[in-house]
Length: 178
Image (cartoon, rainbow, N blue to C red):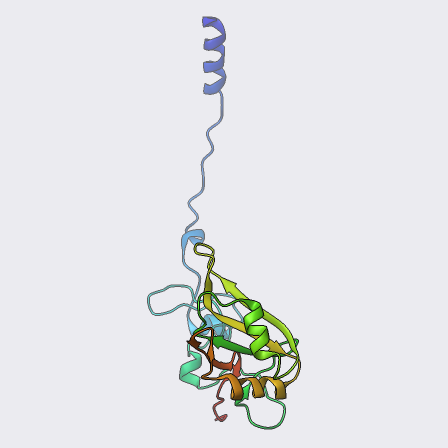
């Protein structure tokens, strides 16, 4: 047993030590000068503190933010105004808030089905209590039915609670291009 241990120790001593060359170029930060950028170098942009910048607006070599340049990405709207309700993928969704905690889907369906055909009704429940969280999403197939539901039901009393009804999704304002 002692002989085997000595042989292992001798084998370990025979291992060659590896020496690394001191290559200072590996440890230096990448070039960030404007001249290096103009010459086609692929060095990343850096801020005043030397931190590497990532994301939009840094690939061009200028450190100007989108706020400074005043150019923002936007989606062009098709015709008309950019304000008002926004259609979801399948229909027009309204948000009903201030619901009584014991309201059921049947109560809401009975209150809103006279206005138009309800495509989908979603009523969230609190996991801990089992009661309604206080809001519901109702989807109509066409915009006219959804508008009618908002006009007719906003401020009405359902199960003893005065509800508020409005669009779930609206198009935001757009700024004129500069």
